Image (cartoon, rainbow, N blue to C red):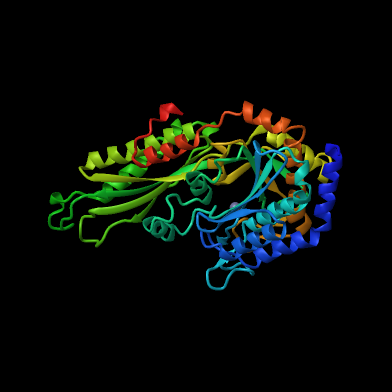
Length: 441
Ligand SMILES: [Zn+2]
């Protein structure tokens, strides 16, 4: 069989199962579940793996599933990944009445197309010069932090993102490179968006401590922690002119507790902020400036400040050769000139963390109306949302694992991920302790 013949056969296997793949996507859409609680969806993934005779491991980071389709040799393993979780959007017409969860980020199409690729490739595994891991990951959305904090205390997780947990647990250890798709809200046409960049972020919980005193009678005996916090907002704003356009830094602090009683000098002030940016160097630079602003303002007033550094998500690094391969297959399916290149994704994703340890692509896909995470988010073209990405990913896997895996080997050899797994884990550990030296990045 030639590579072209194999692609045509896989595409026709996916076409034969078109209704089944759409039904899977719709079933998940109708059963939205929040991160680390995706039990129903996780069972559905396992059911399909069983139907396809793909051996799998379940219960990874609570609800994750990893199937392995064995090819002719096993020294290469390509990953097709999908996210299991929904977002909270109680006003969405198909939201879960109890939890308010809804698939208004379209992660249901990620799982459907990941399974669609498995359905297409499974009968032809013997033609592939390597394995294909089909991976369903929990909890991409950074939400329900108190619930996750509890899971952390119970020893069930360390990170709040499912892929970060997968890295920690070693689920990606045997994977050479990966691909995934994501809905692009508002793009109704049949299009793939290639090489979009996505910011990373870190979080901070901040507490200013001063000294209470009667605000009318003896304010001179107090230390006003609110004044320190207010000063720090000005100090942070004064840093903005030093941020480079290319780093696209976004800092948006809020005061979550501004005092206790109006006639007492505020002694306990809480703030939260994110520091976002398109690259790690920029984020760490801005984060350091925010910390200086907080500490300097506390010092000026004589207050104390504690900064709790929260690991966020890393910026996305899109592998260029994987992007090219996917783009060629995408155009073959959807027509010349249909690809859109280099748009910004304004959110952050823990796919960024995965892209810091292995070559990865995160392709945005059309077929959707409305806004992401909102009540009007709808899938207007089911074939585009569920079936086309399955075909494009399966075709890209074939490109990678053809001719003794020549393409995959070349990508593996030429790519220099930002971190090893150990380096990645160490980075967040040091970050949590405020001990990162940003000059290393
Ligand atoms: Zn999403």
